[in-house]
Image (cartoon, rainbow, N blue to C red; front, side, top):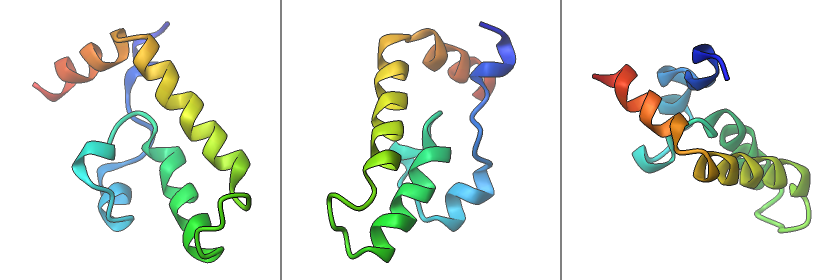
Amino acid sequence: MSFSATVPKAAQQEMEAARLDLGYRDHCAHLLIPLNECRQQTSYMPWSCQDLRHAYEKCQYDEYACPCLSQATLLLLD
């Protein structure tokens, strides 16, 4: 895994514009932003955004399974 893979894909300004809580501003925020938009457009119907939700949940699992991403992020923030 290269070092560039540990940099979050969503910019801080994008996360602020999407009004993401601080707890959700992680490596998967670039997937959560369109998921939340889809949820709002479809009145939170659980079956309407399945592909986006699955991609977001897989990203969350991958981040959980590989704590090296979180450690690299902490080093970048210091």
